[in-house]
Length: 495
Image 1: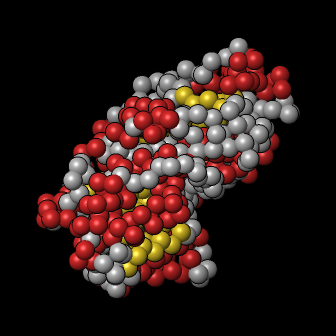
Image 2 (image 1 turned 90 degrees about the vertical axis):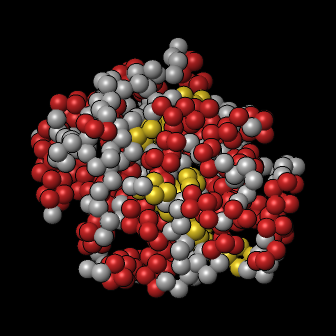
Image 3 (image 1 turned 120 degrees about the horizontal axis):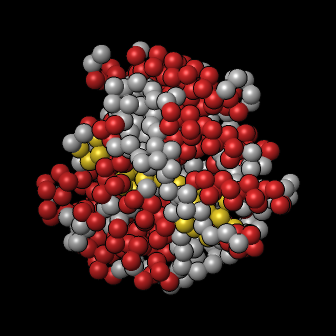
């Protein structure tokens, strides 16, 4: 199939799925064949709506002076971006873009859509080459399929010195995020933009009452969760999860326990290894831990999991750190000021290295799901879009996005040290008091799923459907379930 035909077909199947003309399973199989990853089904996190702080923070005068000067040839230009509802996009759209528009004379239109509709817009734009959108929001699972349809930012810096923002410093983006999110083969597919990642979050008041500290090992986490459930159930449970059968969120939880027990999804021969000794050890652990969770956990994705903590039903979760600023909002939750953050418990067994896994899988208890921002090669205004992209991802703007209330994990290392960020490390909506933990997790604990075309089908259907059946009691044992998954996965991978 020619590349142009492939792009047209990819756009058609995404459009058919979003419009309800194609079944979920058929879409997954087609998407796998076309190199689209786990994010194709709108599996991005359901982020809590942030409460933005009302304070005197404004963009740097030096940054706006640069925008004003470099944008003169582009005054009157309209730039367009379709994006998922993420903390950076929400903060820029509602709080910050007015400063860029006033300084640049440009207009920026940001469409916030469900993730599958973002993919729909992106694939149609690439296939048609119309350049309707100047910038692309790229879920990490799409990076391979769109890598040649966007500018490598390093090329833009080298080829457009007159448009380069002073001190933009592309090397400030955290290396683990560049490798895990923004690179495909030898290319940067944009720059790291957003980084949801697993951290440990727990009710410090409950843990203090029980005489517990943050769990240092996975077994200690289980023992604490069981003790809390035994003493406080059914009003309060020790742990919680995102274990809805057939949903990507269930696969996310599984990977954390699998990696945490020294296992991996694939071996270096490309065969499924979740049913080996380490994989079965992880399932035995998870089965015990699930008994310390609220009864509704098998019907929850990340949103239900977060709400179980926010409403005081569960005392802890090892999950997405972006919920932490929401937990601190006294107008939205019952746990404001009661939560603490820590690194995930240490793996029980040594982590496998990338050379011991397959398809670029990076084991780590801090499961991540990030995204990049890039300039489209089809844009009619690529230079103007590059100016906006530098502004939207520069140090100063990242500080404002984080300090104004999104509470998101910055993708630039230096932002974590900014005094404006540290000043927001207090109890309240949009807190940043968890960010030191996020930073350590990115550097030391981050886990990334394998990069192969069939991963969309495997992570959204093959694996979580069978995991759901296991927790519903439809297999005689964990070994039977994992052997069934192994057979199904290897069949999909082999084509």
